[in-house]
Image 1 (spheres, helix red, strand yellow):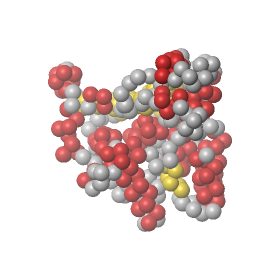
Image 2 (cartoon, rainbow, N blue to C red):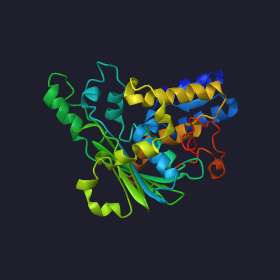
Image 3 (spheres, one colour):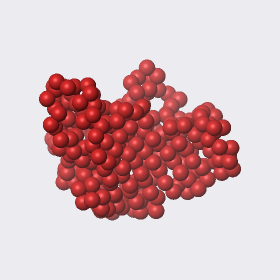
Image 4 (tube, helix red, strand yellow):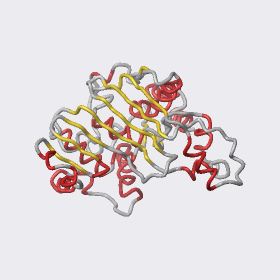
Length: 323
C-alpha cells in the first residue's frame, strides 16, 4: 500500500516519508512521479542503508576519486527470512503472498540505494537495461517440511526462487550485480562491493585496498577498511545516536527527512530515486518470466537525468557533504 498512501498524502499536500519496498507495477512508479510533479509535495524514501557507515565511507572515497573510475558495483539482500515467510498467514505478513505468487527481487532498495548514489543514478547517469535470473524455490519448502509439519502448507507451490540474481547496465558504462537471498540458511549480508580502476572494497571481508596493495593477498587484507575510518569517515557519522536502531543509520535517514522539510531543501532520496529503485521488483519479475531476457529500464526523470541540478540539501545530500 506504499504507493497509494503516498499518492493520497501528496494530493493533500502532506509531506511523505515512505518505508522501503518493491513495486507491483511500472504504472505505480509513474503515478508516484506524476503526482509529485503535479503537487510538488515533498516525498522521500527512508532507505536507511544509504546512511550506513561503510556505504557512506565508500561513497565519500569514490567521490574524492580514490577508487579511480568506477567499473562495477555489487550488492545483495541476504537475510534468512524463512520463519517470517512461512508464518506469514497467521502473522498477517505480506511476504507470504508475495513468495507464493511472485518470482522477482521483491526487496531491492537496501542494496540498490547505496549503489545508485555511488553511480550518480538520475543525476548524470541512469540504468539502461536489466536482466534477472531465478534459482529453484527449494529453501522455503524444506523449511516448512522440517519445522512446520502441522501447518498444512505442504502443498503450497511457492514461486519465489531461493536466489534471484539481477544485472544492470548503466548509461555511463558501469555494470551492477545484486542478489536476493532470503530462504536459505545464511548470515545477514548486503554483499556491498565497489570495483574501480584504482581500488576495490569488499564488505563481507571488510577489505579495502588500492593499486599495488592487492598483491598482499586476502589473508593480510581482511579488515583493512578499518584503517581508513578516522581519516575518511563521512561527516554525518561524527554526529549520531549510537543507541538508535540499526546502529545509527535510522537516526540519519529520519533526520535527513525532518531537516529537509524544516529548511525547505531538496529530498536526498527523492521521488525519482524512489520510483527507480522500487521498479526493480517489477522489471526483475518481467525478465524472469521472459526466460531472463533483458528488459528496458524506464527513465522516470524523462531525460532530466542528463542535467539535473544537484540537491541543495547540503547536510544530507550524501554526495555533496564533503565538497
